Length: 251
Ligand SMILES: NC(=O)c1ccc[n+]([C@@H]2O[C@H](COP(=O)([O-])OP(=O)(O)OC[C@H]3O[C@@H](n4cnc5c(N)ncnc54)[C@H](O)[C@@H]3O)[C@@H](O)[C@H]2O)c1
Picture 1 (cartoon, rainbow, N blue to C red):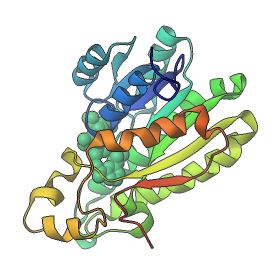
Picture 2: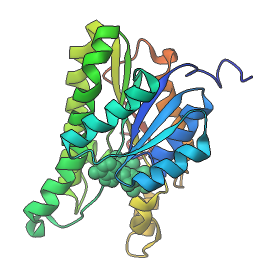
Picture 3: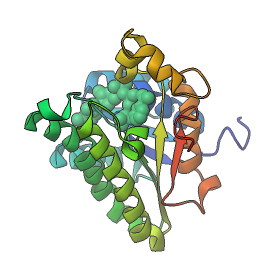
Picture 4: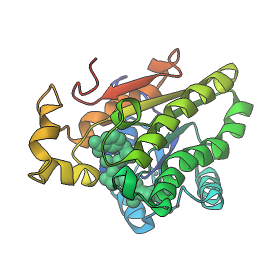
């Protein structure tokens, strides 16, 4: 049996979007390790199911494109059919479509806004009504240093991630009377999303120099922040953005 800290999500159920790899997969593993039953929802359904099988503890995997409302509603219904309820939502799914401002197409702009911003909105709307009825919920969104400081070559991503900060604070205010907390994590980790800026010699040294801790985190190092927001240890914390970014956003 685990200690109190290890089992701080015992008996809880969670829905994690983009959970098949990277930070999402680390969150799935940490949640399962903390005692939660987890629904891994990812556009890559095969990978989501494989991870669910690997972590065990009653985890399930479902194919879900968060940009599509119907898909999110269907995936949430599948999770509820299995778990009876969803206590924790993590809106983590993400993509990048980098291009300089003057070259960015509508397609690149819309793709990123649809997955990050509309995707988080779809997740919120799919789980919030039942959470409101039960007077309990923990929602964790994922923003980025790009959303609070801006970045070069990703105006779509920065705008979406800044939008997620606003969405987090507004949802936190609206849902607080129902004992539902809504917070956001601004991570920095070695995943496929950051591969180019970590390995390409044109970017590597410049980006590393921006991190006071002097290294990229493994996704598993970021996951405990999600466990904290999802747990009752954070029962009085809402509407906050916590940067787990090696100090990149120290001002
Ligand atoms: N890695 C970092 O340093 C960093 C920094 C800031 C923010 N983030 C954010 O963290 C989150 C996770 O990123 P990551 O680094 O683990 O990236 P990743 O590319 O490793 O993982 C993203 C996951 O999202 C899934 N996905 C993509 N589009 C989807 C869709 N439409 N519907 C459902 N799932 C979809 C992918 O299949 C993948 O499993 C993202 O929101 C990202 O913007 C990451």
